[in-house]
Length: 556
Image 1 (cartoon, rainbow, N blue to C red):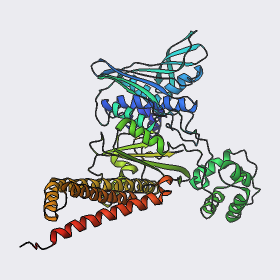
Image 2 (cartoon, one colour):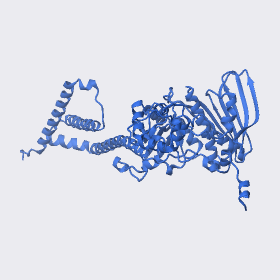
Image 3 (cartoon, rainbow, N blue to C red):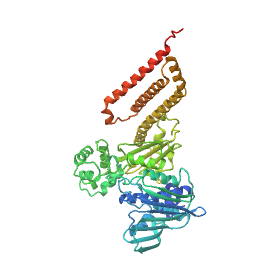
Image 4 (tube, rainbow, N blue to C red):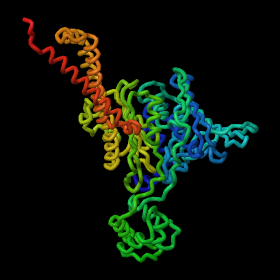
């Protein structure tokens, strides 16, 4: 073949064409997982929309089998709705959305998720996605949409409007191919973990096996995160060069202070001086070699960390409330680490451990920006951090993940979560992220270890008491007979002494487990001193009785 023949065969492909042939990259590997991905994308969008609008989420999900490996999925929310002209592009165009260009904590990032669900539906059943939306203006817009794969553009099959109906929100209806199963990587588990990480949400799930309702555990929304500008320590040469060409700033100093976060004029001038570039030079005239010098100068300049008001962690109380609500454990403890930075992006780690109660097997729950991660567990930084901990130090058995009735909740929040793939199922193994997760889990494990240690001591003490009580009556009779004292008096003194020693042991144990003493107890030294004297008196009485038992018999 000639070069001209090769040239005629070459053409541009759209992003839709690429994912049409590589849908596994988006998480649509098999029919079971495909149903989960559709529900996940719809619920994530509903939660993001309601939270940004300041609305407590009410979400309805229905999965119904309508044929052989054919399912109808309906997802409905009470969010702000979508304006008419945006509906086709949001659901019928890949890489279209509002989140990719904003440095702000969001569940979605790339503008692929919900449109990929539309693509999978039309690939497997040929059916369009049905959307019903209203912004609360009395008009309900209805669309049936497919994707023009060659052009990556929405293909409107049908559209209409209904007036005079008071409702606000979005409802999606998919008719897709799949298989419904209920196990640890399934739709019920995803919705349950979503309810744990989003205790402010009320979710109703109608499945082929019945209805499950997840009630709201908190009546307030998480803190609303703010948008931030990029940080200089996270900018690479190619991105910096593009920003220099596109900026509206007139000088290099104003470019550095206006386009990046936490860069003041003094710091900007220092960077220009180190890079040997005039601070008044126009950014668009900066050459590639000068841009390289800027990057090197930034590396040697001390910069403030990016602001953390762009993050919205759940907080210890809401995390524990979510765990208690859905798992009903015997013990629960939570830790929220201070914000850290990777590649210039701020992030924060939250960890919660729940033990016993209705938890019967070890369980790891991974989350990124309040979204459960159910697949690719072995490739995730969270799993690597947990399995890298020496659990025996905290009194647990087993290698990797402890063989205990233990649920481990790990939540990473960031303006840009470093997922390992477009399917957003695992977090990349940046050393600083693994370190923060390990420190949080270890701190929580220490608290749980103290609790379990105290519990084991208490159980051992109770076992000793039960053993002693087994022979108590015979001991009291023997002391009474040998000492000549009244049996009831011996029994009373004996019981008081045992109870006194038992209380002392419990006080010592509680003190070792960070027990707090109330102000009222601290203000009553006289009462404590009196109780101490009573204990000493009972001890003397018992010793006197025992000495009588040891006296020689003089009657013979």
